[in-house]
Structure formats: C-alpha cells, structure tokens
Length: 127
Image (cartoon, rainbow, N blue to C red):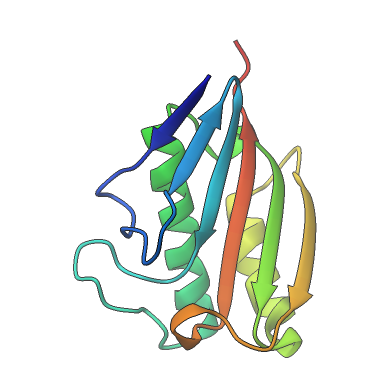
C-alpha cells in the first residue's frame, strides 16, 4: 500500500514529486531545502540557519506521517561545499542524539535554488 504524505508545515514540492511516500511501514521523505513553509523564502543567511530550517522541514513531514526523527533509519546529506561539513554535522547532531541513523554525505556541484544543503530521510514506523 502506498500513501502520499503532504503537509503545509513544510515547503510545497517545487517539481513533480511529493513531500513523502509511505509504503507499508517505511516513509521515504524527499530532499528538503531551507525554504520557510510560511513565507516561501529561503533561509540561507548562514549554513547553520539553513541546516536548522532543513531539519525543521524534515520534522514537519515526519510528523504529518505520525513519526518523528526517532523513526529515521537513513539520511542522505547533499552539500554544495564539503567545507561546510563540520557546521552541518553539528546542527544535524543536535537533532539526532542517540541511535543515529545510517548516513552518507556527499558534495554535489549544485542544488535546487542554489542552496548549500539538502537532506532526505527514510523512516520506519514500528507498530
């Protein structure tokens, strides 16, 4: 069974995709960038602010599916500059404090709307 998850508490998709898709007990959350869902503006003043907005957007999508960051089993972090890794990792670590999910972090040549960070997650809902 496949269920589409969308919430107004996270940015609306900027292309032909959904915020998340729930398949059985797995939630696949599309990559989130630092778009403020209320204003529609990017929060890119510094990498920490940008990273916090990304994590808040992820939390909102997870909550819409009845989950939390504690349900996340895998994350993918995309950076426009690997020199930002330490700062992004520090923000990320403030949201995941125990039972860390599996993860990869890669530098890419460009991200949507020329942001500096994008993160996607996979979560598992235990019964």
